[in-house]
Image 1 (cartoon, rainbow, N blue to C red):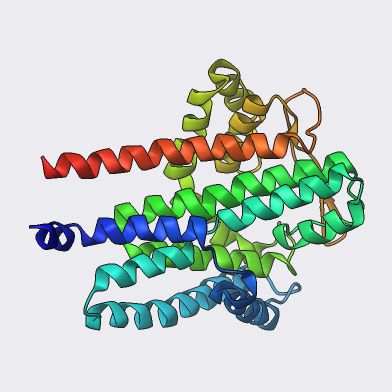
Image 2 (cartoon, rainbow, N blue to C red):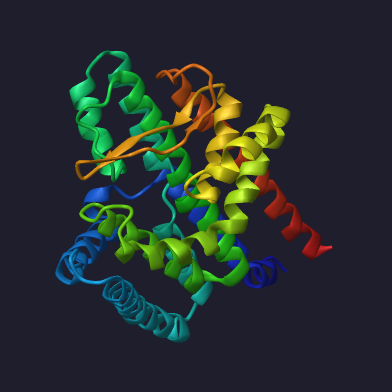
Length: 314
């Protein structure tokens, strides 16, 4: 009886095990596959990116390069799944490798503690790998603001969106999405954010993230400061440089009662991004608060997923 239940729900068991493993035994970046992939993708980007080439070359080069990367990796993984004795467990391993949340939380809390102790130089060095923007001249408030924005967006993309795609379309789709985010992250470190070379990836990721990012934003809005959150979405989120990001930062800004967004420097060039809210600037004490808000959203959706799985048994 028990073996039949396990066999029939092995995919859900593997899903839960992947979430627990990411939460309690996350991989260190030193030996995480993403570190090696990031280096490879960055080298590919440097090889093919030509800033003086016309727009058509930028589009074509980016599309062909990302398509080639996805094709090679996904074909190998599909073949492994086809010949695996327990493909559900392999799918759980793929999900585990795609998720990234706990390690970000730990680093964010450490950066907040260093900033509170006025160790800004060390805080900036720890913050640098999390951002594509320049951090060398950030003030204490700027460090915390950039940290909170990165924490929100990374948790949304590398946890909530990954799980949404995994449950809706399967492990291959989740892996493809995660690879696209890694490619974009690797290329953004050396290429300006307004480059035509990055536009195909940005457009594709915007479409993929459209529903899950808004679901997460509405979940946070429903849990705290609902009226203010909807006001911020209307006045800021819909007019932000990227509306998926705008929705999420707007609801988090309203939930915390702090100002987010604002100008940022990328590769020596200042980009005047919209400020969200007119409240106070964030402080180190706001970092554990936003982590708690994101954890509440995480628990809510995991309960919804578990409830759906239980209903299937009835």
